[in-house]
Figure (cartoon, rainbow, N blue to C red):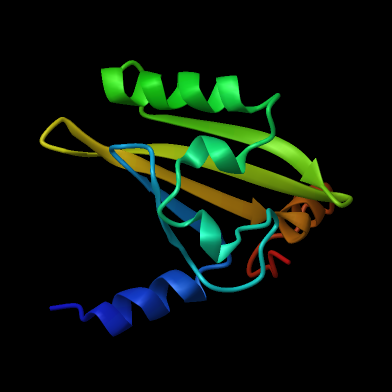
Length: 127
């Protein structure tokens, strides 16, 4: 069986910024490490909507509403942050069809973009 220490180490080892929002729309987890988007510890225990710019808040509300209603299971957005290409993915978490929360995964993909541009095959550094 996986221990909590192993789970935490696994999540922190991934080259992805992870945020977990519970079924009540409250931020309950951020993994450790460098962040593309600021994630202050004070945001834990607070509504996810308070962490987003006002212009983005309606989109976040609609996405989570769609997740809760089962209209959608995921959404991936290609964006740019500080001159770096970024993929932001949202996933509805469910158990036996019941909505448990939302997982947000953010990843800088400079290495992937470079590999595609240069038609590189084999191992790549995603950073």
